[in-house]
Structures are given as structure tokens and as C-alpha cells.
Length: 332
Image (tube, rainbow, N blue to C red; front, side):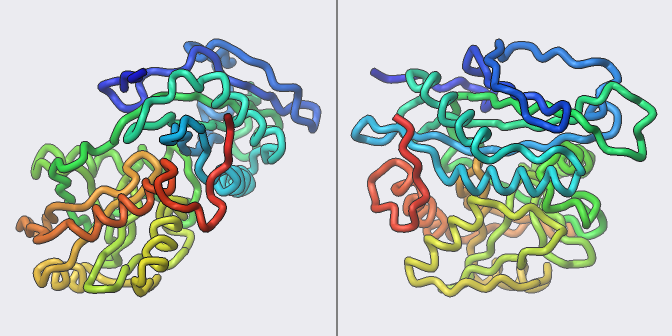
């Protein structure tokens, strides 16, 4: 039976969501609530002081009918790290994992067939109803998970134009590795400006010429048989898809270079035939088709290697290739 995919990415949710509260220094039993609404006090810490973080991962329906989660332990670990940096209560890893598995089982009939998937959005928010805690963390929190059937974030084959921004930064440098809403909000003015003035899909933030990431995805340059991407620093999100792509590429014989590189090097490489890709849970791998650098649009001449890497990764997710790295967790 074919399962429809909503036209707008992340706009339709499974009817219920698992919720657990942290209070009295302990995580409470998980409850299931309707996913349409969430009751919060107007003074909740997250609403005033940004004490929130989230994750994104996917469940896949494989060709044989089996349902799997892709690398959930990595997402759990990254949210626990984000919570630690934000001084939020760290989710209990076992409770978190069970919430994910139970949600996927309940929403199994809604998982679209390949090349679509079920997108999961765990969210952690500080709930102390005290607006006087601007300089103190929230002692209470909620962890809940939404499930949404999705297709491609960027439609396969559609142009992906990237504006290279060298004057502004995506977010505060020490917060880049935290997956929180404030980082996306701080990038929004430059993303909207790029769309309005250049018809760009995204902005590649390169403060002082240092190539980092876009407003919503990690960035990788493919130059001959080498993948080049910024090393893991606090300035940008340590993407799980990024790590998976580098691993798959290494398996395929590519040289992996995690190093700093400049806009000048990027431009020269693209003008001489290099490819570039965006990576993320939503985007998977989206080959870039052109860059706007210094007001001039520079086309990317080829996207074959980017699409080949995308196929290599999605073949693992959908069960067409062997899962050599133990990334898949069977759910049902």
C-alpha cells in the first residue's frame, strides 16, 4: 500500500507524542499526549531565556517490510551534550531510546515508502515558570518527541543555489555545536536576504573567509578524490549525517580531509570542476548547483559524485546495502 507524503516537510504529525517531565531531580514516567498542543506556563524558562534544544533523526521502511531507526544513539548523545552546555537536565539515555522506539512502533503504519521516511523531532525545554531566572538555569524540563512522515527537504534534481557570506556569522561561535532554535533564528536575517536578493536556497557562513556551514546543513567540498570539510570545533553543528557521509566516502576510497579552508580555495576548486554537498538529516545529501560569491554566480559543473554518495548512504538506510557499521536499529 502506497503511503502519501505531505507536500510541506514536517507539517503533519502522528496523533500522539511521548512526554517525560524532569522534576524533583528525577525524570518522571513517560506519558502519551496529543501532539496538536502543549501546555506551558507563560513564564516558562524556554520561552524567555532560550533553554531548549532538539534533535532530528529518521525511521525507514525497508524493502522487506522491516522498520529501522538510523543511528539513534548518536542523536541521544548529542542531545545530552546540548543539554549539558545549556545547563538543562540531561535526558536519561535509556528512557529517551525507549520513547523513540515506542513512537516509531505506534506510527509504523504512517511511515512512507522509499525514498521518504518518518522524521522524528525530540525536543527538550526548560519549564521553570520564573522570569527572574535570566542568570540561572531551569531546574525542571520536558522532553517530548514528534513524528512526521516526510519526503525530501530539497527536491531531488532541483537547483540548490548557495550565497557565500563572509561578513556575518551563523551564531555565537561557542554555541555552534548546540542544536538549538536560537542558532537557526540568528541565521534567519541573512538567509531571507539571500533569498530576496539572489534567489539563493541557503547561506554558507564563512566569517573572515573561513568556510563553516550553512544556516541548516553541514557543508562538504568534493575535490577530485578528496572530501574537504571543517574540523570539529565549537563553531558549527557536529552533524550525524556529516559523519555518516565521511564514513561512507572513506569506504568508497575517498580521502577525507577535516581541515580549515577558505572561500578563495572553495571558489578556485569549483571553477575547476569540484563538487559540493550539503548534509543533514532532513536534506540527507543535497548537491550544490551554484554559488554566489562576491555578487557573481558560479555554477557547479558536476553533481555525479554527490548523488553517488547520497545513494550509497540511502541504500544502507533502506536495506539495499549491508550495514557494516551497525548504524541501524530494528524497531518492528
